[in-house]
Image 1 (cartoon, rainbow, N blue to C red):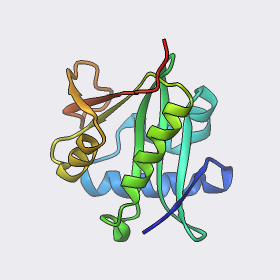
Image 2 (image 1 turned 60 degrees about the vertical axis):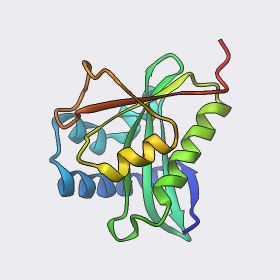
Image 3 (image 1 turned 30 degrees about the vertical axis):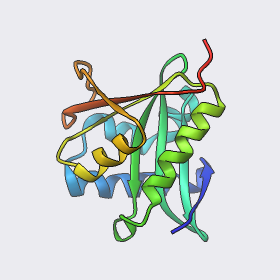
Image 4 (image 1 turned 90 degrees about the vertical axis):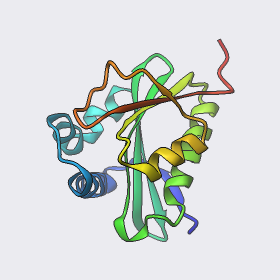
Length: 157
């Protein structure tokens, strides 16, 4: 299923909330940090130097993900969610490829992510794109038991 990926617009903020809320409550629970980011995504992500993207199939929003600035040229892949009935159709794959291409184009150094090893399909996807497991002492989420990082090939010092 081929999707078009677009940048944040206020008209999509409801979908950022809904898709992530549905995913979090399906697999885990919503932490305080999640509440803050989901209710105020523009202020908590965009206004702090991050990015939010949406996957569109026609005019329907079918997925989303964010890059949150953590350090200069280092971002966290965050709040990736795909509509439940469309999972397994390659949307997550396209979102991650877009994020990697975007990050390389913008000369970012690396992308980190925090996940949970019960999400076998997600971990497989991250490995497929070259993310490597790292020590996880700084996990910002209670549900996180794995940290992964992708060092970007186009980064110039």
